[in-house]
Image (cartoon, rainbow, N blue to C red):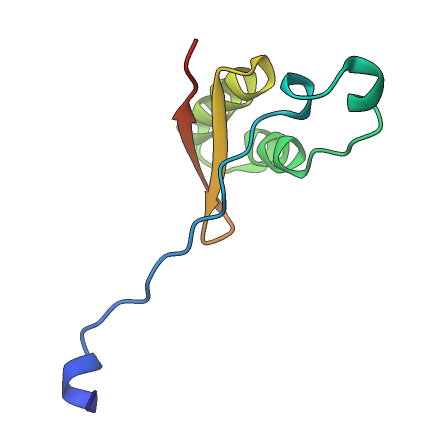
Length: 87
């Protein structure tokens, strides 16, 4: 592809695989030994993000994630994307 064809092209986004909270798939005694990086990242965004609306949204996502209602994927490594799980 020549330079004129790629000039206006934006970078493609990458998305990680969806994951559920460890407590929804492991017994409690095993789940205590697992460090959930998605939970930690959501907590950090919920506390540190400058926009109050984003903090509220991520706090709700964290609550739903911990209860097993949603699965989280990360787009470009920093933007949480969720999917509802079947009840």
